[in-house]
Amino acid sequence: MKKTARFFLLPIGLLFFILGTVGIFLPILPTTPFYLLSIYFVSRSSNKVTQWIQSRHFYKTHVRAFQENKTMTISHKIKLIVSLTFVFGLAFYFSNHLHLRIILTAIWFVHVIYFTIFVKNPKKLRCNCAKQEDI
Image (cartoon, rainbow, N blue to C red; front, side, top):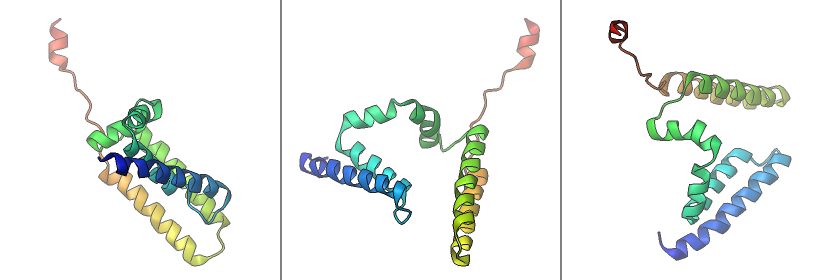
């Protein structure tokens, strides 16, 4: 990527980070999409930042396997669905509009279907038990 393009990516990433942080306090602004955009733009601006993000424990345990193999362990799926249910449940509880509740339920349902059906479990290595008995 050209150096001039990288020069503009870092400020854009920082802007999205600020918007995401403001979104914590203002319910009008969504936090997660801004943080994801922030990570995208900042990581594109510098190879060092990309390596730093990929060296973090959270990235190694939760993101790498999904990014490389499109797989997720059952325990990670359960944790993800429970946290999604909690967050969407809070939004559902505090919303007074029927249309918003319908949209929240539909989005939650799509997430649950996607992670349970379309995201596969990693294949486990199976041992050959017949060879172990010979020992």
